[in-house]
Length: 282
Ligand SMILES: Cc1cc2nc3c(=O)[nH]c(=O)nc-3n(C[C@H](O)[C@H](O)[C@H](O)COP(=O)(O)OP(=O)(O)OC[C@H]3O[C@@H](n4cnc5c(N)ncnc54)[C@H](O)[C@@H]3O)c2cc1C
Ligand code: FES
Figure 1 (cartoon, rainbow, N blue to C red):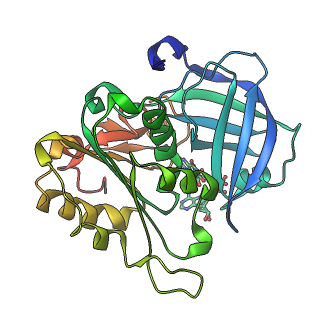
Figure 2 (cartoon, protein in one colour):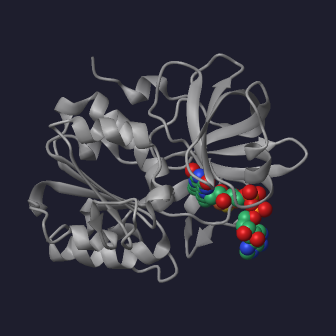
């Protein structure tokens, strides 16, 4: 049965964190770890793929983190976090049973209705796969609602590949065209070598029915956007997710502002058309 996201949607928890228990820690790479949480209220998080939560580690601070699992009726959800600073290091020191505060879900996620019936081209670089995984899981759980599904995933070295077991399952599926690449040759890798744009020439794209979902480091956007345009994909059909320094997450503090947009509220997901004239966006 198709999963209806709208029925799971809850009023976001704007200012008061709700406690969530860490139920499982799944190491991914040297820097990134997948954390599985359960809200103590017993309610579902009620997110859409592409939305984020503000995670607080008590006594340390808060950080915006994308929800990496698909919406579900249970109070459980996944966050995949890179250890880079105070809050993310505190998370990495936690063990099952520890608790964090959660505000959200916040922001605009991927436009699910606009994706239905379309060919989907996912282009994820590095940790960009984290928010995209939520959408991919949802698309694969409702596979007959979408046309062709192509996933391009690039990472710098084989050791930086996330979600290995799940990717192996995507690779097995006949209804998914998955292409992986590492930036440079490596003794542990016998697959494609080259930056993610080197996967584009082989792709057969029907631009009039394709939506590209592109998430990765800022440098990737410039070159992937060029490739999407060379394939004839329209600016409205290219969907990106932006990262900005955030504080409130709810459009009050201005930390995430780019021109007249608040990334926390108007995004983090935008179409390229929405942001192409905002020079500092990408
Ligand atoms: C919408 C959104 C979704 C995100 N999703 C994810 C996700 O799913 N997974 C994930 O791992 N990350 C995600 N991030 C990034 C994540 O929010 C940051 O890595 C996190 O806030 C870091 O918090 P921290 O307290 O651990 O690091 P901090 O202690 O804040 O430090 C982080 C880094 O920034 C530097 N720094 C700190 N303050 C400043 C400053 N004022 N100016 C410049 N540099 C500074 C530090 O030296 C350090 O290198 C997301 C960000 C956004 C906006
Ligand atoms: S984080 Fe405060 S306005 Fe966006």
